[in-house]
Image (tube, rainbow, N blue to C red):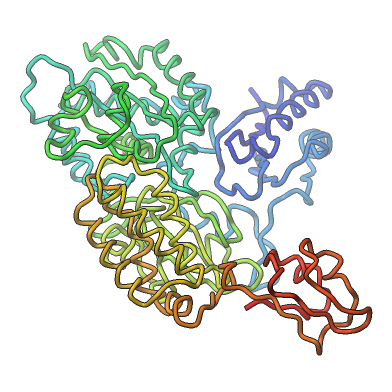
Length: 598
């Protein structure tokens, strides 16, 4: 029996900060102090506060150490684990705005408003040890459905829970399963697929679940296989997720060894196996029919629908596909009941949603909140607000398929229908925060550039239409646009939405249309005034030196890579605009605030 447990985050974020070395150092220190039989060293998945990694949590006290360095390990072992003295300088603290004091991690705004369902085991268990998953009621849900429930009863529970797909448009999960279940089985195979091809910029929710709790996905897929009458599943995961791939391989091997995958599971005669398929990073393979085409060994391109995958999917057989987060909810719904899950969220969007917070926000990381939480709560309370005293300007949800939510909708409850109503979408759950220094025209151009590169090229509206939209945006950011171009952007965007072959093409114009809707004045400034209000678009920038503030220190001239600044010592300097590269080095080096851009 161990008297203490040391949990070291082994997710990608902490791994990139050196958590593997920290774990090795802990092991060496514990052995050196003779504590290896008293203190358990556990590698976990992501805790959520990615910006604070590497993270170490020590139980039974639950002390949360952040930004731990290898050199800190001997002190933690000798002081905390040997003498019982918490190393206060490493403990995560959050400033208490009301009382001027500090709070422990579990009481912080970041932690206390979250409800962890899909992420319940992430940062808690060793994802490479099936016994730890079983110790948290793992595979109990699978045992329950196989021994106590009929397939139709399983589907009824999922329908009653109100669970909607967490990967995009939010189609009811139970209804998808029901469609595949009701198809008359002709002796052929049905399939269960997991979409782990997480391609949205700034999204890492599914990766974190796979790295922190892979067995939850395996168990859920087996449950779905029983419900629809399938004996084979596939997980399509990005090859760029090496830690997730490794842990899935380990989890599948362990589940087979324990008889939880394979033949005659729990002695019920039910057979179900899971295979891995690695994606090469094509964004379009996040679309369900393109993903299935890729699993088949063909070029990943979407297929026309109907027929829908529940009728003719993988290998033209009935197939259901859900993303990682959707699967991670299934075992908990079976164990706790449909009413438990439906008690969270809003009328039409039940349960919780995982978001990856990024961009201009203090608490970069992973959060899970009940549906209906407002954007203001997510950004200001859980996310810790916008850094450096800047003002919130917008948030992009849904990645390249989503839209920008402006300040005027800061208090709209986040759910599927509300986001669509204001011109955005839930998507897989990336949430990128922008402040007053972001140019919304440039943001739209960034996402459209991504979409143009990732278009599979199968349909003309997406292949050609998005490129034409990008060219217009490029003109506008260079000061060459016209007011007619704004009308043309809207016309093209609406045409693509109505005519593109797949959901990715149909939603590609969203970032442009939403920024035109809420930030049209910025577009007009670029076109009419030939100015970028945020000072981002280089072609419209001009750096100027205020002679009243310039002290003639020559720092700007000495650091200018183009040699375009001239002037005598202790006299105001000037910039030759014809030579200026607009790199900003002069403004960065000026100590007197004499240089501005506009």
